[in-house]
Amino acid sequence: MGANRRIAIFFGGFVTAVAAAFYPIFFYPLAHLNEYKQMQSINRAGINQAEVQPVGVKVWSDPFKSK
Image (spheres, rainbow, N blue to C red):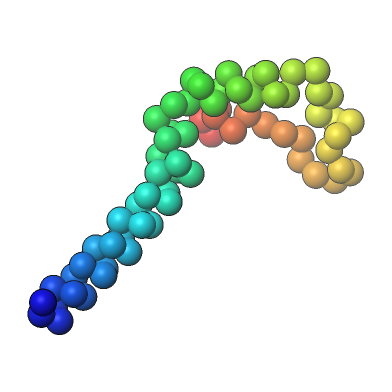
């Protein structure tokens, strides 16, 4: 196998590994917004945000709301 082919396979594998790592972190949540909104509403139910936030820190906001 030539050196160029080996280098191409190495970098192709690297790019594939990075893409595989980014999919569950970035792309899956973007594609399933309603599922994540529902999970957050269940997880944050019954929490008084002002009581759990440290002094001087901004109170939680909806991460799915457009700015």
